[in-house]
Image (cartoon, rainbow, N blue to C red):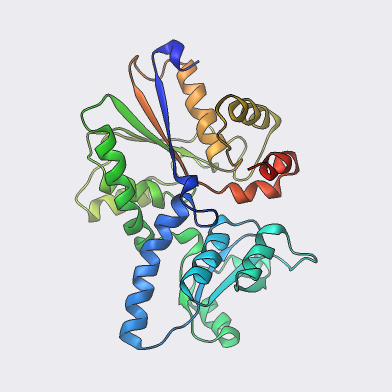
Length: 298
């Protein structure tokens, strides 16, 4: 369909970086791990690396894997009650050495507050805290290098970089690392028109950048975060069958759906090279029964 419109699609396969620390999770964690390393050096301590996430969080899974690989103790503060047995994502995390601390959904709403972290530390001991999803300034820093790579690939070409957005951390880092003249399209996985605008304006201002050649499309969230309607499932099955590239239903499935829908609407000029960032997260497919069989074949 894209070829018929004179478009080409290149998928940047960051899902192939590592079996457990893949996609943008790798880059965001890298920034936080550099800060953790500096903290340990200056304080001469080695506290647990603690972070937040839901029951199928890719970030929790990747943090646990990084901790095991680097010999860093990790803590995952999980939204909701512990289930028996644990789901595959959390079972992996625990087996990789992560301590799981379950909190109520109402308490979880305080995850950004210092008093809540202090309360948790009364049980866990002193921790080095990483924001949910690996967001924040350190997460942005870790993604700047990815932006440079993407920018170098498209330099001098009629192209656009497309990626899914959950916190816009990766998008911010990529924009900072990539030349401003290269168009960047973010596809929001969450419902909420304009929800990233103020945040991105603030980040870019700190780096002397503008929002030139940056568009965030809020029209392809498919009902909201983690919503997986039948039409999206059908699209993913067709896409995976024709390309051999597996997608996750929360982010990359919606990204590819948006790209194909926009192409049908002649959104891009003929000859445009579309570079889609595959941000990994395939382990999360195990939370969707309709996709589990395909996941077992990876």
